[in-house]
Amino acid sequence: MPILQATDIRKSFKEGREVVDVLNGVSLSLEPGEAISLEGPSGSGKTTLLSILGCILTPSSGELVIGGERINPKHPQQLPEVRRRSIGFVFQQFNLFPALTAVENVEYALNIKRINGPQARAQAEEALEKVGLSDRRSFLPRDLSGGQKQRVAIARALAGNPKVLLADEPTANLDSQMGMQILELFRALAKQENRALLIVTHDAKVRTISDRVVRIQDGRLLN
Image (cartoon, rainbow, N blue to C red; front, top):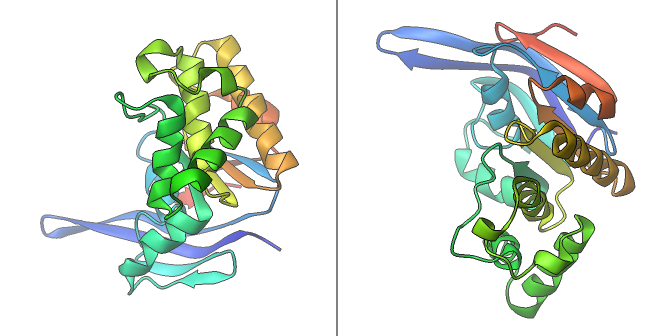
């Protein structure tokens, strides 16, 4: 059974007096333990689709179900709670707080999910251990390499045990070797912990760890 099911998703934006259709009937499912690569040219609708699947934006129409819960486009106030409970994000620019250590960055994400105190610290340290950074938990971002920063970002995405991981160009700021290590880590996390993984990318290496490659163009999926 899919952990995430998007059916006939459409999204339009107003630009002045014109209405621009960005997504035109996208249907996509994510299964537990599945890794999917989402590819497409700039302006194809990748970022908008990622934002809708991640409960940052609501669709103009269509149906989105995450963990058995239907997202109602008319109730955007529903999004933050679903996002906190079910979605983990990994960004291209890492987005770490420079004044917080590695473990504090992960702990902060848990605080947002209403997990605090010793429980948050224990879960943050466990997440860092999963990505191989226990020995860097007290380091500030400035003292970490690019690959280590991305591992902290992945640990943060794991905070609260979300069943869906969404990554936006996670290897763009890494060299080829480190990028491959990060992709293999993503693959392992998806398979071992039965998480659904969707990676938006231009990096052909992502295909090597993907169960499916999905292409989007002009707001429509090609396969």
